Length: 318
Image (cartoon, rainbow, N blue to C red; front, top):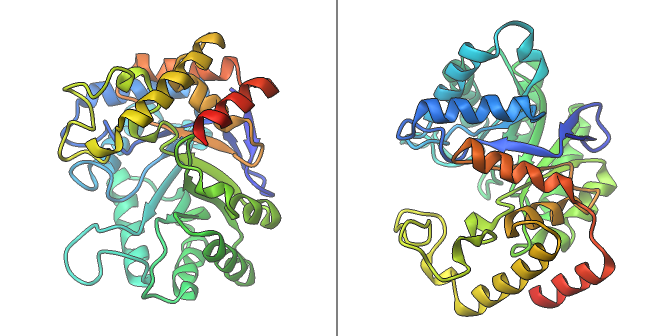
């Protein structure tokens, strides 16, 4: 595992980070989740990414990760990992459990620390911009989290290029630099290339890509249509059935041919493709099993692309 410097900070993050969005909630098998986290650490993944609402049930991923920490990361091992959490999406009922107010962010952070039974997180994010709250208020809440000793660094997620520029400037004025931006980025979702990555590079802010496999589309699961047990077939899933069009399946088949010629799975190639841009500090993966985790980490065995491969990929995606 290689570790990349996060923007212009002193913090190094692994090329691959583990996200606990799925498979770590109260509805999931705890022993399986624990095995995934331990294997990830043994493979060099030092960064574990959470949010207040991860589950399901919301909050249960943090509770379970707290148990995993207690069982496996006692003593100085806490100092060998980076834990991040976020607040911004709906967490509790009423006017104070959502968006970007100072009250919500700081109350949520206190709850997150309690659920995980830790004194601080390494990175605390504003999970999404709030159109109704002044960006200064949200950034002041992040600044306070650091000054109160409850977070070492702060970041933002899902902010546009222009919102990012403003947020980073406000944080700089407050004296707490923005460490990182967490953005949705994959072969099939490339909005960050239209300005955001340029702003992050200019401002010295790192970038971590989430949903790098486009909710599982960039795997071999959909090469023959929509299987019964897939996320697209699940009415409660984030991937909708109408997103798996025949046109898109044809593109996946063509991309898979390139991957096979590289001795990679489609998923491995999709993860490696993100690594080619040096502005990407880390790529955030989920895992439903130790086997899937290890298969994804194996993408690091081949992250170089020839000009012909890159051109072929572009022609398929365009």
